Image 1 (tube, helix red, strand yellow):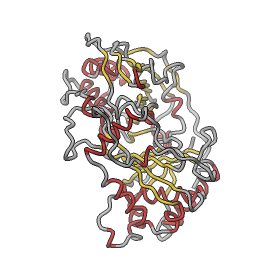
Image 2 (cartoon, rainbow, N blue to C red; image 1 turned 45 degrees about the horizontal axis):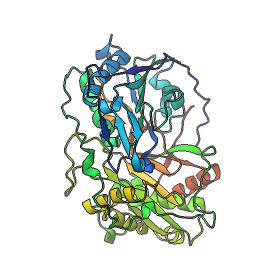
Image 3 (cartoon, rainbow, N blue to C red; image 1 turned 30 degrees about the vertical axis):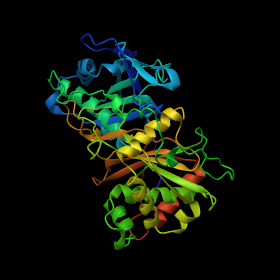
Image 4 (cartoon, helix red, strand yellow; image 1 turned 180 degrees about the horizontal axis):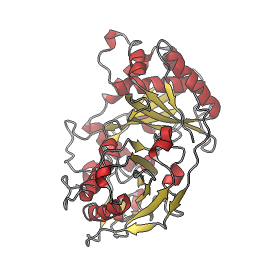
Length: 451
């Protein structure tokens, strides 16, 4: 499974970081985030990476210059991104729209897309070179809300990497902003979809009242010591590709009585089950999985087109570890379907109210696995003029958070990729369990790298 080829080494020459500000004057004001935006579980930085091949039609054009100029124009409309977060009473987050700008880094790498090979994936092992962590820039309060690095490649292609303060936007909201930049890069003066703030649409009621059960925010103790705790400094980072053969093998395990299942439901049930087995959780411990459920475009929600805040909740499925591990795959899928069915306007309001009542708590950590479906977010469609990226999506998983994204592997197969990080012995058992469950066809394939 692991690549035996020699590591690929390349160097990146970076210019000093600079601030890109809106090209025209913007309002100087303070804007509140929603009560969905500013929960503790979203107070972190999300890394994104996109790999673009050379386009002969763009000969003579510099992607750094084009994107930098387009960014300044887009910030006129998305000016809150050029501000800084401040915190008010009851930990309420607000954007101070100072116009200070977003951090931007120009860079050059002495390599090509072809040389990168299987490094073009989430969990890209060279990511720190492709998005420099500017000292002092990674805080939630008082720091730049976006950091961008554009790295030219020797082949004429380039890599666009970005880090976003997650309290500002979710995946679709960020893609909306990137689409605005791409439109400016290609000559538009106004985004085709104007941004809408209106974060009050997802605020708590007055008075707030919790009306639903929220397993995703329960306080849990790890009394038996088996509930998937991890040392952030001792984790293995890998990405797993699931193509048509793997999906077919998993679907063959499901009874007709289960009814229609999405590929995402099948995959995350499978990964959750294998992950729990790999951790050797005590059979009587309660484990849970929280699936991000977006409310855009769903009946009963009044979010206008152009809304770019966080517009999701993550209802949790819970069960005893023994039940999850001993039952067939359909058991986990039924739990997921039941949790997703909880999604409603009342459920979202109850989450917002919970945030206000309980001081914006963190999601449950012991025994919880969180996964987000970004297959339709649109990262792979962002075109700055050079065409679509060969890969576009989140660059890293976190210890208990993974993302499911569309991916084309080196064989040209279309499928889904899920980045995962686990302690070394747990990762080994996890891979073994993945293989066992798809042994009637080719095993799930681990994306390996030359780096």
